[in-house]
Amino acid sequence: MHENLKLSIGGFAAQKWCTLPFNTINIDYDGSLLACCEDINHKIPISNLNKIPLKDAWYCDAMKRLRQAHMDRNLAGTVCEECLAGGGGVVEVVNV
Image (cartoon, rainbow, N blue to C red; front, side, top):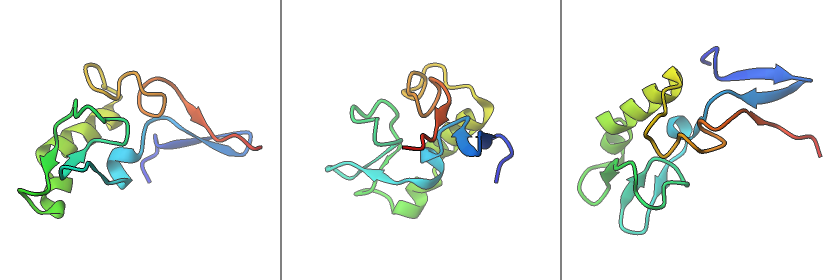
């Protein structure tokens, strides 16, 4: 696991950046691979699964750039910039 991915606050994990581009697949009704579930307006064009296989889309340059931007904490100009899970702050696990 990347050392910047998680830290512990009071025994609970807090994410420093979003894990969705690394472990979640979001496919729209038209076959578009989305950056994440929040990208409903297709602001980050990834691929269309009607045109290329899922494996190729998952490892395409656009997804690699998005993942690198998250690791570099350089989300300016992306749909992720204002997202709480991505760039807008620290997401803490709440014990309810």
